[in-house]
Image (cartoon, rainbow, N blue to C red; front, side, top):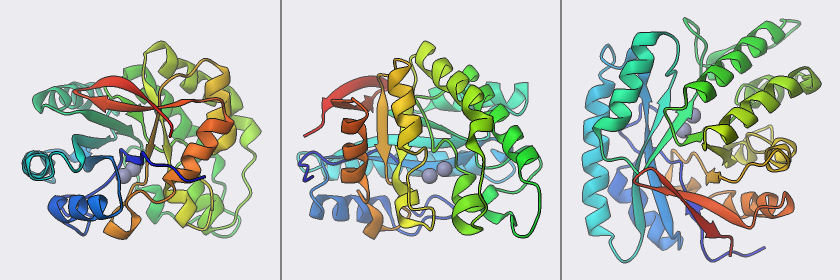
Length: 274
Ligand SMILES: [Zn+2]
Ligand SMILES: [Zn+2]
């Protein structure tokens, strides 16, 4: 379907270690693409916040967004955000994550798990051959549940992220029925904490060919009473801004959502899908 009100609440600028364009350039392209609402959500890796100068990243990214918000006023709604990764691995990190989330006047904080404690991002892992990935996935879902319980964010990023690599990149089949119980627990925890679930469309552009999480999980979230669904392209390049969002809207509608959630000043607003 064609939609007028394209919303993209998950994007990265050059302030992210894997980003490539300035916030200004991202906004300029978003206007050209007719996007209505754009959140800039650079990475803040909380386990390495001071060690890897993410405090500086947070400061610079927020300043960029503030400038862009003024420059593009009336043409594009620019929201200030952060993708906070690895927030719950110990009490000190949890406290720090809560403090940083409150330190800036963010519109949206995305909670993410990209790597397990003392491990590399799943992106860098080798799942070829006969290696047993289930212990890693078990641990991954454990930490997603811990993140949901912590709840110091607004929307939970790309649930099932490791499948992009295990299934997508390495073509390994995963028996997801093993995780239906814990996925339900994660979804119910989000619902009880009034947190949103993100439908992240990056997977549409990758070998896995489906979003994170997929339609089955989105449908389950709705069935369990989920109300707040956010959508994000996870664009690291201007060409990916808004990409897959119409497909995400299709999924949302099929699963029974009539509205998509936008966060402003960390409050949820339900926007009709149109
Ligand atoms: Zn992420
Ligand atoms: Zn991201």
